[in-house]
Image (cartoon, rainbow, N blue to C red):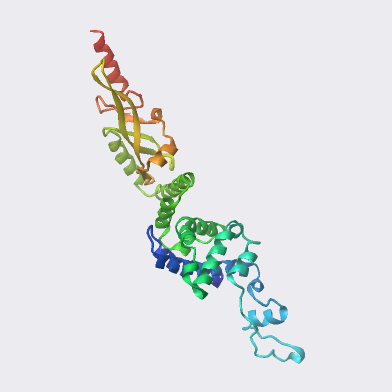
Length: 320
């Protein structure tokens, strides 16, 4: 791993430590600066892996052999050592790094506009009035996009994510989910995050057994049911609200349906009461196993909310 990658970790982890759901203008500026310093080094790391000459302002042979091989004995005519001049070690700008690195990285190519935005922000912070910053765009990149982009770089470069974000992965994923404006992208991120939580915990000794016991206990609570979790495919809890209307002929309330008010999975820690997400998931009533509203002892997916045994007893009574 070259030193440009290692240097980038310092700035990325510093930025991650300051990220939160609610951040001030001052913090946005500081995070943006650290991200710019981190991404510029990351891009140069990609280029150095291909050829160190690619990051030099002057890549000519006359300059590059002096700039890149200072520690080697280099000679010219008559076996005389080269002059002590080190050569021009100046490296290319952030923007040029993006342009060159996208030839070698699909992730750079796919996030070119975001990287240019961060580069522009760094230039404004360093050389101009802060009023020219697009703070809304920067906040969106920080909260919504950063964790996804850096995860993609982690996979592409085969560098563990923890090197970039330290112990902040879970925090950054939650911020990204909460800040995402597009509902379906938010759901995709939510599912992906909790799927990874499940993969991380499922092989821990006793973990699955413990969560099964907790889930089984909760499932028999009134107005509670179970379904297959959309993230980890284990048994999840749904909290229900009975919807009924008064029947004047029978002089009693008739249960029409159940509305899902919460989805809770003890296995992957998915827990949402966001009605927009619950509606978009489209959990059908017939897929929910509910505690019988009569005996509260058995689970049923009957629309009536009453288990088959209780319905049979009720029907038998009608014949007498």
